[in-house]
Length: 124
Image (cartoon, rainbow, N blue to C red):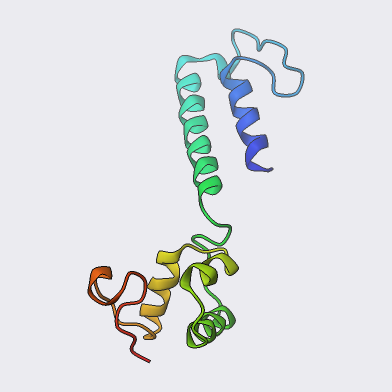
């Protein structure tokens, strides 16, 4: 089930309607109990927050890095590509690229204002 489908289903149930027919649920239906309505609304809020997060973040945010992607990012840095371009090409954020390069030992951790905004002192 896609996220937007889950949101629609939970919203419909929380409104006291059958998710398929949209007919009002029986007043004795478990989904009409006050604690069930509260739980459905909490679930709806969580799903909406997830949807918002997915909308604001690149597709690969939070996904594991492969060795191939590590090599490719390192190669791109070695070629002097801009970190913004690298992030866009990999569907990741600039901080994620920088953090990965630090982890791989390709750049040294540092404060952005010390040696440039994106790449503190390079290590290797």
